[in-house]
Amino acid sequence: MSLKLGVPSKGRLMEQTFEWFGARGVGLRRTGASREYAGRVEGVDGVDLVLLSASEIPRELATGRIHLGVTGSDLVREHLGDWAQEVAELAPMGFGHADLIVAVPKTWVDVETLDDLDAVAAAFRARHGFRLRIATKYHRLVRDYLRAHGVADYQLVDSQGATEGTVKNLTAEAIADITSSGETLAANHLKILRDAPVHRSQATLFASRGAVWDEAGGALAALAARLGLSLPDLV
Image (tube, rainbow, N blue to C red):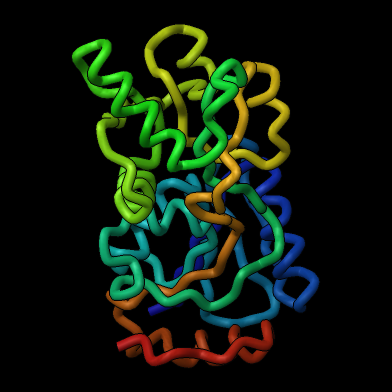
């Protein structure tokens, strides 16, 4: 059985993944038509390239349908409840950097920290009769983060679209979202709280702990040697 390597199927993240492997002597090539998700690996025998969306890769790793996968560390931590037991982090790749942050309206001049947010949330509930809404795609990470910092009296509302616009559209009072430059936040009159981010994300190479490694072990060893990686115990 071949070792299956899952990588993002499009965009800058795919291009940078190809560049990262190529710089280490492993060629990743997309084959077929532009809309066909097919590819090949050159430089190491016994490795199949699987092109997937970045958000699909954590699930495919957890189920063992792919052996290795490149995706954002934020996606693995959000989608896999006990991620360290389901996957092993092999290598941070140095690109795809983004911070998962909490942001509030710039007009909230007295809110700069999570302690301030907690106080505002309590006052908001007393005044309006419902909890302050924080729009996000990252429910698990944000809930754990706010709990650890003692923030209460809030509710998370799901946002799968333009999260930064939810405050302007009056569907949330604050947001928690990924940002790399902060420009979109500023354009929507939002400011980031001064506390440390919820998570500092980057593209990372992960290995599945649930995959069948018996027949793929040789290819993994050869690939790891080419990439200069040390391997953890995966079983």
